[in-house]
Image 1 (cartoon, rainbow, N blue to C red):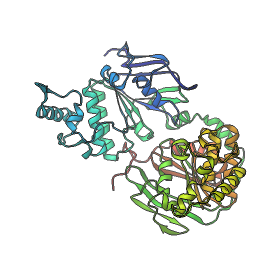
Image 2: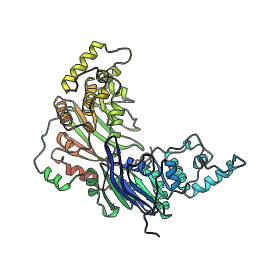
Image 3: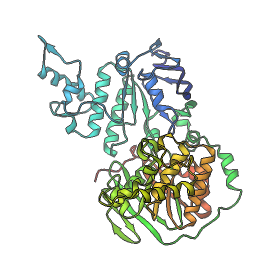
Image 4: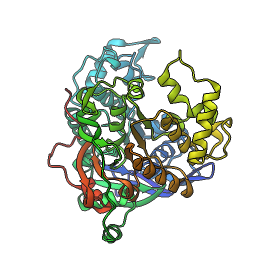
Length: 514
């Protein structure tokens, strides 16, 4: 076998509007290996894939496939050159048959007519190589997501893919489906195909991959063999933590403790197959419960189940000790729950509306269309929260999209505080804001807690969680793996809980379907 790398990327760089998304990244994929590409939110993984495959034009750097420089200008050109990508959202046509999807654009024809029987026969033969025996004349959309992924992979391989990029392929799969996929990946690797595997599931990384590359803030941090990369070192590398410094910092003194009231909310075995394994948690008035874990660990999934943005298929929610049904966000509003989502610009603010309109949005939604808030009430509420939270500029009629990220975040907090919630869920409340606004948000969290509000806060900033949390629930691979309280809460303990090896040996990190 040639010593020339299958895929060699050198000095890959890309910037968007002055933001350096990739800065001189090197990457090597060998024939027949499964190589994990890891990193937290904003690490540059998506930009790396898009730049290598020509979806986004690179600013600098070189990509070589089997030693030959390539510069594809689209995903189609990339696939023809030998690099194919299969995303979490498969991207095929569910209304067409399996065979039609497999040979889309390459249908066997005679006299200008598609040879349907021959196409179906070829499709059956191709899929048999993947251990897949299905009715290839049926619509692709009639099959589970796992089957659709395998069809997409089969199509990519049939297009002569030498390098296969799998971007979060297991995110919606159950244990058995992940096992089947891993079997296919191993067979492809045995045929000499190199596989780049992007995932957030640590168990899967150690179950299937040969090497690991970690990106952080658009830069290459390290590349190591999986077997020689201890889990704790991997977590520390992804988060950019020096464990010795964290241990020293943890010895500086005990955290201040608060006395919380009775539980406002309790979740018992709350979960959803293929989405989140059952979790148990409670949040009391005057208490901050932190949710810690890597990106994709199940933190946001927990929040969405509690708020009704996703419906659980097991477990229950109790408010003030009584079971309640939260079938959607409207029910959550009625029960005085609030939720500031992680993606502020896409899921939070309505950029073209004014600060005033954004602040009163949730309150108006709770009252319903037949009880509109009068303009005087809207003005009073908006000006009150603008003053309390120091939203700048203090102009309620300014479009919120023109405000800085920190002031947008404060306006979102104002939206939910205006509903007088008894529980507020904050998902990454300090992400993407400047240092001054960051400190203000932290102070606000503390003051809300002291005022008796129950808070569930998700954050990737571990020092931040340690600072204000009374308890910390640690998530990994969409499962609850630890709960820390009182003096046990420190960054080191959180890191160790994230990195701890799971007691099970199955490669998947999803529950079996109910």
